[in-house]
Amino acid sequence: MTLPVAVHVTPDVSPEDADQLLHDIHALGLDPTLKAVPTRRGVSDLLWLVLLALPVKPFLEHLTQKFADDAYAQLKALVGKALHRQREQQKDRRVLVLEDDAKRLQVELESDLPLEAYRQLFEVSLSSTQGRLHYDRSRKEWRAEPDE
Image (tube, rainbow, N blue to C red):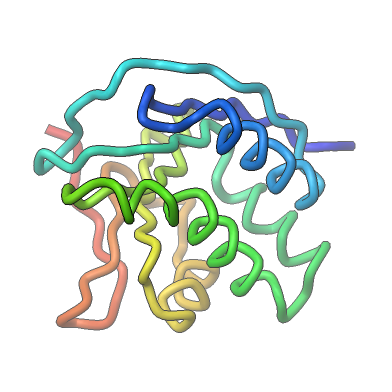
């Protein structure tokens, strides 16, 4: 069974880039559906460029099953491709967000996160995590900030 994912993109993502993103997500074994939405401000005024609405834990488990030890690199590559062109055009820090509404969880992924950050993400206990999860570069760990 293919895991469905709603792919929300801001108007800053060109139709060609959106099509490529859908192709890249499908190549991971997911069933993407594109939804264009206006740019919105998130927690800490971060602008997201791409938001993948899906159950995060099953998504990471799916990547692990499909790609084994290469799962971290596959997710890092997806984020890098999704944010690459826009990073060249925008001066704002833009992120790709994995959003799990059922768990009330948002995972923020930046294009330049180290591979170690992705490895750690796969080890985070997501069943008890809520709010905004982001990688703290100074502490070299994932940190959750509760919803307000």
